[in-house]
View (cartoon, rainbow, N blue to C red):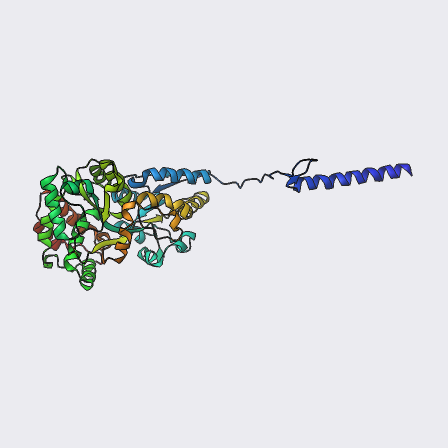
Length: 447
């Protein structure tokens, strides 16, 4: 009998020990006499991920520093994914060469250009319609990048034309406020040329978006009518626009061209900013996407941030100012049948992560653009001080679509080449118009 009680006692002890051990594994707090309750952390086994490397072409010169911070944040949060950026400072010729080589990066930037048309036609871009990030973008911008029923890009912002001023130079020339009309702009240019050592104007005409900006602003403000501008856009795409039939176009282009700083014809955006940093020009015609870079440049030149001013380009009659605008470049995901499952998961993770407000702010705030995704709440947006009064003015201004939405490749090459020649003093505005008349029926978007 004694042996039975001993056996039963041992069994009970073992049972209580097992229960106690199980409870100790599950509990998240321990108690000791005469001490406060302290918490202990139960370590979870981290989810295992297969390592992957993805290649992206979205980093741009005007937010290169912000890209480093963005990449570091992503890789810190996703240590199994390595992001390699390529093509920094390259233009669309980089993309064209990678298309030709059938070697597109996993994530790219593009816009409504022949390159995008070629990629859509070749089924090279992923349909993002059902991706998580697509729900963040307004329909207007979705429509801009919906091709053949597929959403092929996420727009990074709203693009529009601006004029940036070094007010220290304008004040030296006798101007305490920026010019507000075409006539005032021409007088201001003449005064700067006569009274200062700076050139009146600079622009990044080495980029077609910006070289064409000069002409499209002159054109839209001469037409100065919504129906006429709409007709221009449709006729341009259809190859029927009469370039020789716009009164004043030749005269105004000849009038403004000599005021641009020598070197503008070949300048890229970083070059134009460098010229402003060096105080070589008083005014810079540029896209709003260069706002942060140009604000820093002018502040460096003057040593005084209050000398940085931006307005809509004063190409109008003083009452109405037409600007040019467009959805900005889109970020796209390329189709690659050779991607592994891990690589595809990495691409999707990165792309959806990019458009979360806490992450996209690195791009938006570095570039000074106007965001078009709902995740960018007011507390995350930091526009350059000079851009704050421009945004409401932009929203109220009539606008013409930027040229890359309207032209075909051969026309763009010829016409923008002539604009560069005009700025360099190697061609007249009449020769420029003659070339556009020649090219119009030969190369047009709706061909």
